[in-house]
Image 1: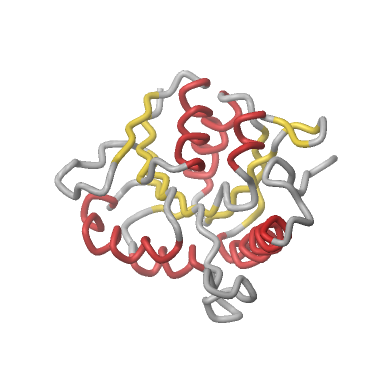
Image 2: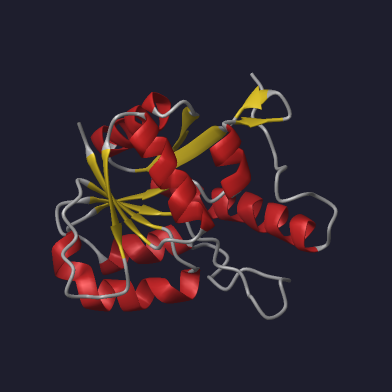
Length: 190
């Protein structure tokens, strides 16, 4: 059994917690109180991109040696018209630089909470795309996701996080413009 710590208790945090719990894993929801220790083997940052820097500053030492999952989409929340990271970078890459003793993965950012809860999207199983440089960490997260009833696909190295963030950005902008429902999304069909 894997222990999954989720920092953030919004829709995405709750959806990811439900998947991990459905798979028989222990889930720990961690609030903003920095005195609450993070004990999970996998730590999911289920917060908006602007909150990540504060979490790293407060909890960086606690995250050493752990698998840290970045679910953020680093978009300009005022205009919804661009990503706020450099064209050759990603939020996950920034996080990996800030947490060199952690195994950073990018996942869940191309999913909406509703499709994680439903475990399907338009009759197709919901798929979580996972990017990262540590094969064991990716496998551990994939095992948790699959045990919870959702598909998982290895999307490659952490350098692929930029493309995953672009896909997440596209979905979010389409949803905000009401061209795509929050219960919809892009499906991976084999």
